[in-house]
Image (cartoon, rainbow, N blue to C red; front, side, top):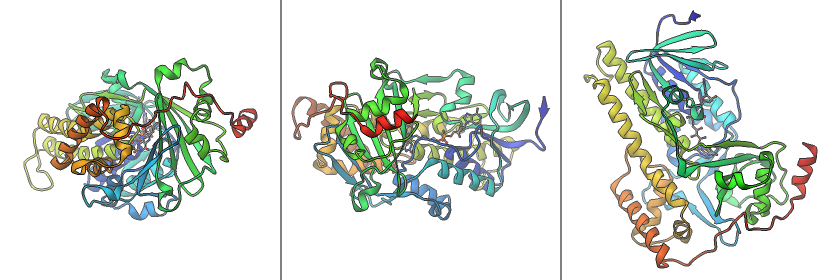
Length: 450
Ligand SMILES: Cc1cc2nc3c(=O)[nH]c(=O)nc-3n(C[C@H](O)[C@H](O)[C@H](O)COP(=O)(O)OP(=O)(O)OC[C@H]3O[C@@H](n4cnc5c(N)ncnc54)[C@H](O)[C@@H]3O)c2cc1C
C-alpha cells in the first residue's frame, strides 16, 4: 500500500459536497494544507435544490456571489403551502419575518451548484480529488488520522467527515442511529412545463401536505421543476407499486400536484432515497469533526439541510484551525491561547445541538395537522407568524434569539390547544391512500417509452 503524503496534510476532508467544499475553502484560505477526497466525478446529480435566505447570506460572506450569479437559478422570496386536495393554498414571503434580515434566496440545480463550490475550494488551493472514494478509516487519533483511498493511505492531523448520507465515519464508529419515528422514503425527479405561480412567486417552493407525507415542487430554472414526494416508510411499503412508479402513483392521487403537472413533461427516470433521518453522535471526537449530513439529517420539509450543513462547516473549520494551533503549540489567528481539544469538541457539539433545535421543533410540529392549520392561517397574536418565518429563513446562528425562541414555545403550546379547541378555522386534510387515482396520460407515455 502506498503512502500519499508529501508532506502531511493538516486536514483531510471526506466528501466534496457543498459542506465539505465550504470547510475546504475556509481552511485553505486560513493557510492550512487541505485535501478533499470525493467519491464521484463532478458534476453529479443531487437532491436538495432550495436555499434559505440565511444560506444565501452565508454564500455572500464566503465571497461566492459572483460565481453564483453566473449559474442559472430561480430567485426565491417565499413559499407556498397547501393541503394535497389543493382547495386552499397559502403563500408567505420571507419579507414578513420578525426581523429585517436578508429575505431573498434561490433554488438551483445541485449538479452545477455543487460543482461551483468544489471548484472554489480548488481555486483557493485545496487539493481536490474526485473519483477518490474513501474505503476505510485507517487511523483516528488526536493529531494523527489516516484513510485509505483505493490502495493509497492519506494521512493528516484532523479529519472532517462531510460524506453526506454516506456517513463514512459514523459507519466506521457504529454511531449512526436512524430516527425510528421519522422513517421516510422520497421519490423525485426533474420535470418540465410544470404550471408556475405568477411574478415574484415563481420561485416559491410549493409544499402539498397529505396525511401520508408531502410533495415539493421547486422551480430550479426557467425550464425545469424538481418534484418529489416524501412518504412514511410504512405507507410506502404497503403500496403495491414498483419504486420507479411511486412518484406517478402519488401525483395521480394528489389534485394540487396533478393540476400543476397537467401539461408537464415527466422525467424518464426518478430517484429514490430512504431512511435519510438519523443522528451520528457524538458530532466530534479525538481526531475528527462530523459536518453536514455526515453528522445528522432530520427532514427536508423546510429546506434547511444545506444552510445548517454549511454553517456547521464554517464552525468546524474555525474549530479545526484552533485544534491545529493547539497541536502545533501556537496561538489562534486572533492571538489567543487555543482551547483544549476536549473543550473545542464539547463547544462544537453544543453549537450543533443548539442551532439545529428550532428546526427539530418545527419539523416535529409539521407532521401535526393542528400545526398545519395554524400555519396556513397565516396570522396570530404577538407576531407569532413573523417569528416562525424568521426561523424558516434560517436566522438562528449561532443560536436562536430569545424573541424567536419564546414565540416558538408559544406555537408549540397553541398547536396542543388547537388540537382540542379550535383557535382558527379547521381545514380538511388529504389522504393519498383514500383518494381514487386519476390517470395521467403523459405518465403512461413515459412508462411505455422506458
Ligand atoms: C429528499 C431530500 C430533499 C432535500 N431538499 C433540500 C432542500 O430543498 N434544501 C436543502 O437545503 N437541503 C435539502 N436536502 C438536504 C441536502 O440535500 C443536504 O443537507 C445537503 O446536500 C448536505 O450537503 P453535504 O455536503 O453534507 O452532503 P452531500 O451534498 O451529500 O455531499 C456529500 C459528498 O460526499 C461524497 N461521499 C460519500 N461517500 C464518500 C466516500 N466514501 N468517499 C468520498 N466521498 C464520499 C458524496 O459523493 C457527496 O458528493 C434534502 C434532502 C433530502 C433527503
